[in-house]
Image (cartoon, rainbow over all chains, first blue to last red; front, side, top):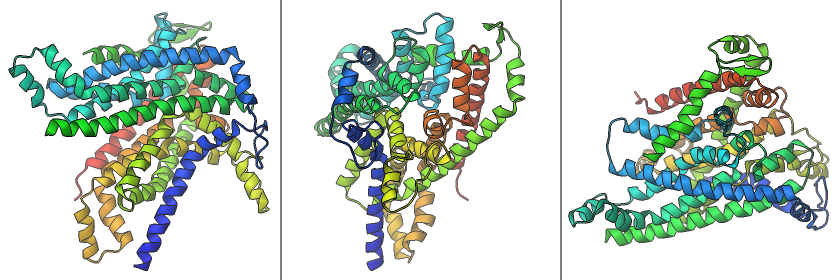
Length: 269
Length: 267
């Protein structure tokens, strides 16, 4: 008994250490964003907001936030729509080459971002579309729609496929069944997918760096500051970005978790 | 079908275009469409290309092994030794880093691990160090670990949580110790999840340029740094395409080998 107690203790401690490792950079950047030293070290300097003032005074950062927000909202809408259609197709139909279709739909996250960036840049500049905001949007939709597809598909897996067929038998048209059965059922997943794809797009830097040209997004600005010197402005921008993405992720999680368990029971009974 | 059209247009087509691009020629700093294997021959004859290739491969493999080994006890503990409530919270927390800026986290490590950074400052109280933890292999691996660890823990946890608990109890009842249970019951049962986690870790480490650049010191370059250098400094895109295609071929080969090993039936 004694041995298993100590193993339990050891494993708990180990888990805490792993979580500490995972979260220490996030925590550090948050703490240092309020720290006065240019080269942060222990012991900390005094509390300051000057890094935040610096980025709020910088028009480049404002522009980047505007571009990022516009890109991520558009990407969120388009990739959620595409993801929903794909998930529904996978749920409803069987057809020749379906496996290839699914592989195609889910493959993009496995290709290294640098390679995606290079390929997109090469193609888009060839057809005269590079360096614009829409070139970032196009590339991000490719990267994000698989996530949207996965989330909606998970939700559809909880649904009885015969519900829709029942609606058809009772005289509902394809569209009616879609809008009164499928859509309400998957709605929480759609909102989560929208938030998560927005968050992914908001943080993506490699592809955006390749194709963005002069329309820099926030992560591209961070990358460029990073190439210079040690600069605590990154901590301030990073903390803001973190708050935005984390809000999106938390909203997505809460909606997906609570709604999906509740209404799943409602439908089963 | 919009997915199909979009993915064909903006995913498959760009990658195919990359194949075409690798056969183009650069004359007078301008790219001209052609069908000339000159880029392949030139790149494959360069010593630094193969150096970078093997270095990237070795570092990515190291990262895969280290991450999997570090992740396993954590996933094991979360799967079997904590309450369901804690497990749910842990998964939620592990998903968070995935949606936070990787760049900012890497920058944070630069600050934490620097010669005057937090870790060396802390060790200094005990009269240790300062140690060089940046711009070397250690820095790169810390970066890869930051990138991969949460994902690998989650993937391992999913496969461990789906193990039939009765099998573990059976092993216990037959007198099997904890460690023996882990190695001869749990690991074989969770093999698929463990391998998939490792494959994702390899893919991410192999393609990442941020850690080797900002924590590893960028010299000597890895393949992804090579791509960026070749692309950003001038018109040598066809050669960058050669590097990119070699990387994709390698990743496909590794993923295919690993996945077929994962699904092979035990004798």
